[in-house]
Image (cartoon, rainbow, N blue to C red; front, side, top):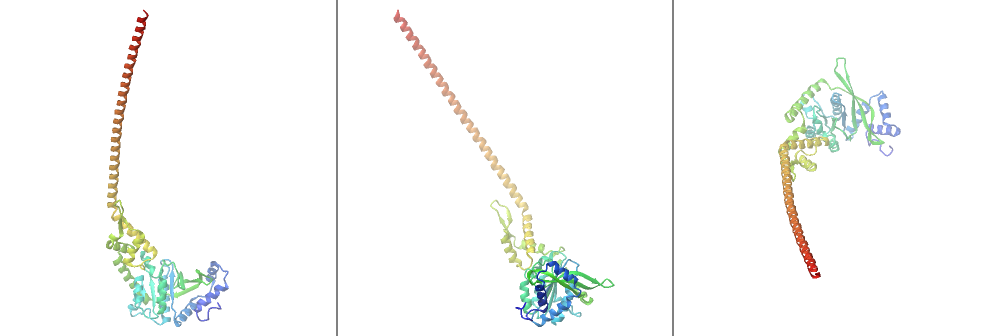
Length: 390
């Protein structure tokens, strides 16, 4: 720690790094136990850190993870409201819904547009819609978070986002949702999460630090938030249909507009999808490489292949039937030719045998003639002997 100049990093990071060095032999379970047993909340240290970042040309990037209904939206909304006050730029105006509309997004495409029109020190919340498969589009805030960090840091823009798809945490603040606190009327009044950050002695390992609680935003905020989310859902249905499935939407779109480029024909005449590398190229050309996660692109490619297979199923079945019929025809021709050849061979064999029999018969006849000639000659000799003796 002595190599890091005092003040060169945020107070919270310095505190946590020093804690990790002092507890270098701790296991993950030790951090978990310690965090749960702490009586004090990390909220004061957290807000102190955000004030320091605001004063030192730094920004805040944080994510919340948890199941649907765990309070991510309320938690991140509360965090966004507090952070925007620290940075001095409105995130929400109870008199003007357009302010929240310019800072609240429910998919990466809206977020990308908002950041493109952003001013310095603004705070943004990407509360990704989870009604269906829209989460596969979270590539812009997960796989490409490094690109965002550079863009956001330059203008001191803050980003809070929720996405169960997130796998690779490159930012500092990660919150794991734990509790929603309700008042006596049953209305939520606060949300509680566990702050997780990377361990100083192991940069790939996240450990629990302590509980953080944010008050639930005022009802005026929720009165603006809910219509904006409903409006987003309507846009999704208009764009993707009732399934709210962007994979299905873009698969059909790419299929209709690029069919010739997506198929190839085998030497036998079957129509099939092109190779994965070529399909990736077609997809990237049409929608880019930032719209989905890797999983989302895999789903998209799989759906494209399925559409191609289904579309040409009858054609390929007919081709298969034709090939089978042709194969059977060729086999039958070969069988017939073989039979004819065997018959011809049998005729030749029979003719040869007949010829051999005739030769044998001729030989027997010749032998008989020779035998008779010898017998006649023998009789003639005997007669002469007998005659001479007299």
